[in-house]
Length: 216
Length: 216
View 1 (cartoon, each protein chain N blue to C red):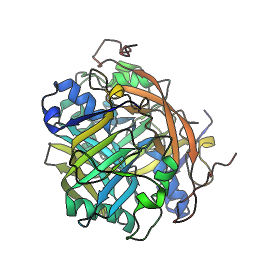
View 2 (view 1 turned 180 degrees about the vertical axis):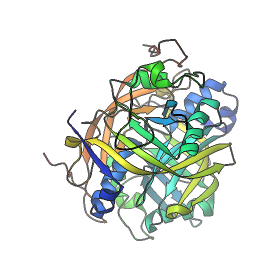
View 3 (view 1 turned 120 degrees about the vertical axis):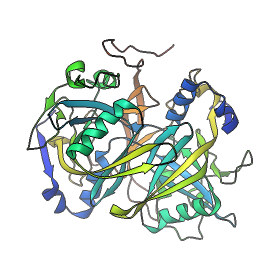
View 4 (view 1 turned 60 degrees about the vertical axis):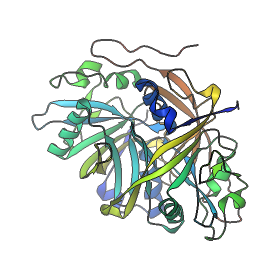
């Protein structure tokens, strides 16, 4: 590794806006990235890419996401709150350019599904559209909304009530092989990455070396 | 892709506990994973692995993380609230086994730095210890705490006030090349992955195809 650069608050404050946004968005590390599918109460569909998901708990199975105050994200949030349901669809190597394209500021009456060539998929009596091209699809029920006053963002919390995954990606112990499902990851605002597994490690205990638990 | 399996709330409810935990932790996709370094007011150090980070905003530069109600995580949270400062240190291929080992339930008077062979690093007048072996190190100031009543977890929000990164990983536009910094990602509870960049894509606009913005 090369010598380290130090950037403190004073230097951050004087960065050009786009540099600052790129930098701060990079620092969180690799992030999950997925398409959120919604419909309004008239059935007009919306698809939008997000990379602000986080695991809240397994029982009940809760997932959180952050919404910025800007208008395109607010369309998705309004649909979620109005209808109570949304889908989270993992992005794979075949659709990441279309997924990125959903972040363009389309007019509210344009469906990002139509504009980007992604296919809305209705199934299993779920209200909101899944993305047909996605291999890992989650049906989510809206549960709670938390305002973050410090910067006017909103956390939406939902419960996973339907899981659609390729059957050969689900291991016996419940682990999902996301690489086999072609799920990708993101960094910064605009960089997409595939992954290579290093290992799965055993449950850690004091004074006991962790070992590989991959079963071939 | 193989045929999809569907798992609904009813099936989730009857899964064995560890299966359920593995499954739900997998569904969020690839996550950022890092070591949080803290010290208590007597200077006793603590290092703990977390994969629940999320970007909240760039101005001010805010990062969130979730704390479960279980005791080991509460040591880190208590130190953060008591002292006001913590570090977030990206994990690379050389230290991921030691990082995983920090999740063992050591007694409160044992420093995970000592137990796992990681090195606490104090620099630039920052109160909390960085992890010397980490290539991307962030100094964070505690800002806010939000309780999630639905499952008794807590969100801690902090502001990034110091950034230490290898100088050749910082691009002119502010983007950080995390692959060059050897930062890795995680899935589920115990799986670690390195990444390969697919592309960086241009800012999306309606009716305009996205293009690569990688500069060689």
